[in-house]
Structures are given as structure tokens and as C-alpha cells.
Image (cartoon, rainbow, N blue to C red):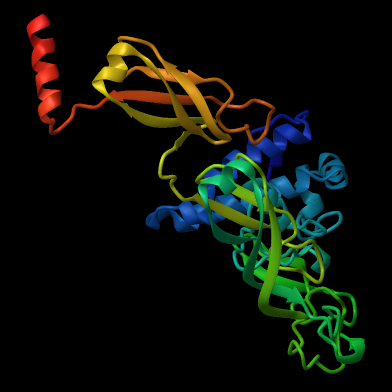
Length: 354
């Protein structure tokens, strides 16, 4: 019985490629064999093969034109052309495009060797409070992959190569796989030479033919002023090195040690200041520490415990702008735990007056 590819996909004969692709995606997700109930495995496989065959034809301009002219006979045994509807169509690429990953599973060799990149590395860096506030230069030692200097990352002794016998120097090989909708031919990167088309005549003794040596490396890092606890500083190209692509990055996870006086609140600095009853009642001028040195503040007469004073622009310079935070001082009126004889007399006299 002749198949109507338009009917199978549920689209009109005038449907454009985007409509066909969208419809196929919906049906492929619905009838994917991996989603089939146990009692409907065969039914789902048959339907999946059917919609995939329809998509392979209707998504290709030349095949669609031939199908519109001769119908399904163009692809049936004894028909006009006896052409396989999947011929010249890389179904795995179609499914990868639609589903975002290789339908067949396993390693994907579709990328070229030259595109492989070094991995990112993560390192926890502990800073003193002031180093985080004002910035600094740090030297750290990490263990990472580095390009072998003896062979310049080629893995070959004296940089001498022979043609890869597995792919005959092409860097890619053709493979066939059996799928629910027939045997599919794919082109993959040669796993023997990783797509280079050549292999080392003799392996480099320094790196055992890998082109990479994992070793301890010292890196000098510029820490920007204003970086905060928990932030991640990305240092470009300081991760694992790659002989065939860009290096990975180094991700520094920042941990800031606490300060004995100050606490940080974003770009602001906070601190507590204890004063006596007499200082609170009569008022006074006191010297207080800031990030930038000592400064004087005025305590007005009658200041209550819990009062917060603000020192403008005495906080932290924002790491990504010109803004500078403020310093906030919380006043704590300190109650003496023990009194001298003279102090007791004075407080008793004050009590009588009150």
C-alpha cells in the first residue's frame, strides 16, 4: 500500500520546512522507542520508522520534488527509481539537531580534532580581609595539564609522523549502525588518530605520546580591589592546556578571612563601638578606625544605645563601578559590671537628683 508522507506527518502538501521539522519533532518525541510502554514496543518502533522516513524525504528539496512527482513509487521496490528514502540523509544528525544529543548514544565524534579545548580548573583561594578590600597580587601553585615542550604537543618524537592506516589519512571514517528504521551510515572522526589523519612514527618519550604533561605550575594572579567572599574570579587560559584548541580557564573561588573589628555588608563596612554612660550623656569626640586609617567622630549628648552613625565613602570600592560604600558604626552604651567607691557615690547622687 502506497504511503502518504504528508498524511503520516499530518501536514499539508504546501507546508514549509519549519512546519515539517516542528511536526516531526513533536511526533518523534511522542513515538520515540525508548518511551514506548512494554506492550507497544513494536508499534512505537514501526511508527517512529515511518515518521522518520517521511521526514527524511519531505525535509530534502530534491527528494520531496521527486516524491510529489511520482509518489511513494519513487522509493518502493520495482518503482521508478528504487531509491532508498534515507540515502544521502544523515538521520543521526537530524535527531541530534532535534533532540540536542546523539540518538545512538556513546561518544560523539562529529567535532573535529582541532576543536577540542582544555578543561577548566577550580582552585580555592583564601585572602586576608585587607587584600580583598584593596586588591593584591598572589602567586599560587596548581597541578594542571601543560603542552609537552619536547614535541610541542604533537606526541611524536622528533615531530615525525606516518599516515593513519585506519582512515587512510582522511581523519574521518564511515560507520554503519542498525536502528529501528534501518541501517544508517554515518561519518565520524577517526578514533585512532583523533581526526588528525596521521600518527606518530615514534611516541615522544617525555609525554608517552599524549602531547600533554600534568605538572605543578606557578601562576601569578592579580586580585582586583573589592572582591568579596564567595565570588568566583575567572582567569582566562590558565586552566588545562590543549595542543589543538584554546586552553581552559582557571576558576578561583574566593574565601575571605574575617576581620577582628570590621564586618563587610556588600560595599559597606560595619563595626560596633562601646561608649560609657558619661560619654553618651554628655557627648564627646572619639577616634575610630576605618579601612583607610583613624578618623574622629562626634558623639552628641544624649546618644542612645543602638544608635548608628554613618561615615560616607569610608567603605569598599565597588569591584565593577566607581561607587564606594559607607561605614556604619553602631553605638553600644556600656553598663559597667563593677563600680569603684567614688563611682557608686556619684551614681547614688545622680539617682537622688533624678
